[in-house]
Image (tube, rainbow, N blue to C red; front, side, top):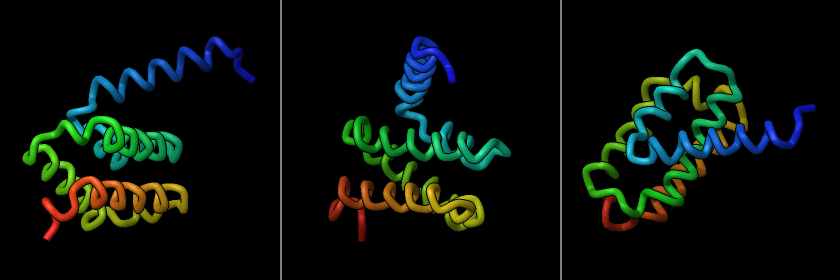
Length: 109
């Protein structure tokens, strides 16, 4: 069991990574595709959720389309990653819901 101070410092560090890369979703998709642990993949998908909830509204149309492209590219080219674990699959489905909720009908046919 880690001391509370270490947990707080770790959380602050991870939050800083999210804020620092809030306009660069490629960073998080690269983490998901990399040969990292399941925990890192889940954190990266969770970070994308936070970005969509907190920063996505400030994206211009090009950035939004870029995130959409990366989202569907991962599904098409690496479905095994998304379907590798129920937690990741469910969280990835949530990303889709958040994107549609944020953009529909403007950016969805």
